[in-house]
Length: 636
Ligand code: 28F
Image 1 (cartoon, rainbow, N blue to C red):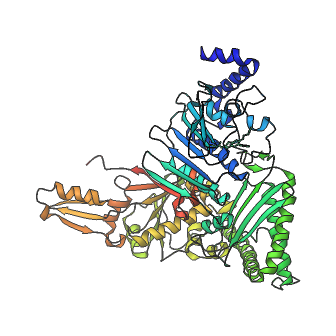
Image 2: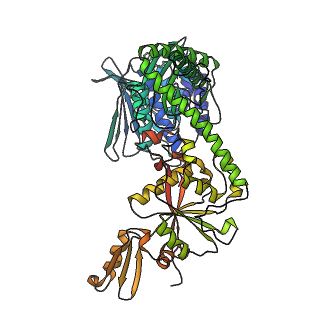
Image 3: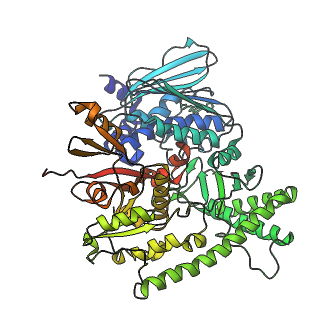
């Protein structure tokens, strides 16, 4: 038998190899996290990371990934090719050892070779063990040799060489369907990682071909980290021409940082250690913040932008409008934290701090014109924060001092939040119809006049001083931000009702953004809804129907015995409906359609890469509107 033959031939080491592979197959989660789609993609990353390592070593500038029809994967690079000479471990080709021995990369004195490892750095032998089959092809000096494995076990020897016109390493593998719940690769997920890798490795071309759909992409960024910053900020206005970029080493640590300030109020911070996205931050981020804070304070004082009697700007003041990418590479990264994405190495903090501080001070000398916009923005941020604190206190006092509810609110008579609903209605006239049409027992109406403020663009203090926003906060009674208290909430359904046109959608988006930023609990509790007014009123003889989509309208017209006698009225706004119609079509729980607003966990976190990488910039895309409630009248 094949297997026994190996054991006999190569003795104790072979037994160890088999035990290792068995351990991986028994507990795949220990090595790749899980056996869902995530684990499946982990295999791809693991193989690609090895090619990226070869690129970082300076020997490879192209990586090609192919997803085949049968979900098998090919990764090919143009590097030196994995060595094939006999390995001291067991006399087998080094390539076979790399593919069969757990952690072979690190164990054999090649610790410094591998940099991109870390989270993914479990070694390609894990991919091999979890593959139904895997074929490695190594081309060196115009000669290619290959070897086939099944579930990690070599089933052929490394072949004799054949002439080829390429050089490098190619790995073909089929994820094992005995291990993975489902074998279906997501091109979008893979693309984001490849794009990220291309940004972090300037000059490296990563291309991906999806043979299932014939979709292909190429990622190549000469500009590196500066281009990355520009990409993140592509829909924002920078406060100065080109991003600040610092690249170099401090001791054994390679540091690349790029940042700019823009006219928004959010921070977009992306930190990496050995190409792993450190979502939880860590010592590299602490060093960076400290350096930026020190350097800006010093330069702002030298330039008399910050006066002597004024206090130093804080790290928080300097966050608003900052878009930054920080990438460090080090020999033995320690990953900590809940998701193992927090860099723990203490030596990194000081290294990044002094490297960035020195670099910044000299850049501020060369480009003195960028100090003022940065410092002035931070000074404004500090003022806004102080004002916001006062505003929050006012809101809190207001909420506690016996509930003086806004005059515009037509409250309901029931006080049981579980049963009550608040309709936030665009415009006074629709508000009037809603007040007349509602069931006043459990439905409260709050009309909003005109446009509300864009909370994404506005600073906190300005947002809180906006009348419409204040009215909403008071009507809900639950406070905002840290002071949010769900038990004080006065309604368990908050329904946004706007016109079914562009303006209406815009107002709804602004409201959703406000709730997402300042009362995210409303979304996680599932209390937020969008009303769905009908688009058409269709009359045929004495029968009146309401249509909520164009498709529904077409069906109604087509089904009529004499389509030319169908009278169709298109609603341009809520205001065109009388109170009875509004009740019947949009507010009556027996007939209405409500769309529940939910958060997509994947897209939720600002730090999650897909928002940026998946060509999705605006915050509104963080919501999914689920068709959760579609209650048709069953009795009629
Ligand atoms: C398709 C994925 O895995 N590319 C790789 C190399 C190159 C070397 C190497 C890899 C030897 C003992 C670790 C070549 N020449 N693409 C890849 N390209 N591994 S993986 O060496 C592995 C070390 O243990 C390589 C000289 N030094 C290194």
